[in-house]
Length: 171
Image (cartoon, rainbow, N blue to C red; front, side, top):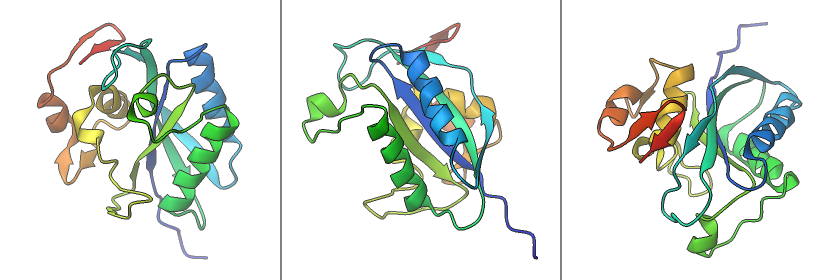
């Protein structure tokens, strides 16, 4: 059997409702149980200032490296992440105040190998990945040499107005 190419997918997790750190752990547990997917690296948890809708609790955020094998494709992985969100109590809304408001869990597919996609169902890289320190910092923790659109993630991070204090991110 020929060697299959190793795909590295990166997922951003976030929560700011209830016990956020516990919710991240529960999401990771669901991902550990996926067939033909192994969790590689896991970043530390960052506590981050809310964006877009500021009047809400701060978020716990982290990044995971997933190593899918076999027939996994980006859209299938994204749909699986959405199913995990739903199973953990996430309710999606078209209302922007609710969309960017408090949420029990958020699991975003950030990158899937070097694939680029403008498919409205699964845009890759994630459309806001280069604008969010709470995504880039944990991602760089686990993949320091990662590039987004052919540009190092560290460059994208250097373009943002943010500061850190320990594990807190202010942006």
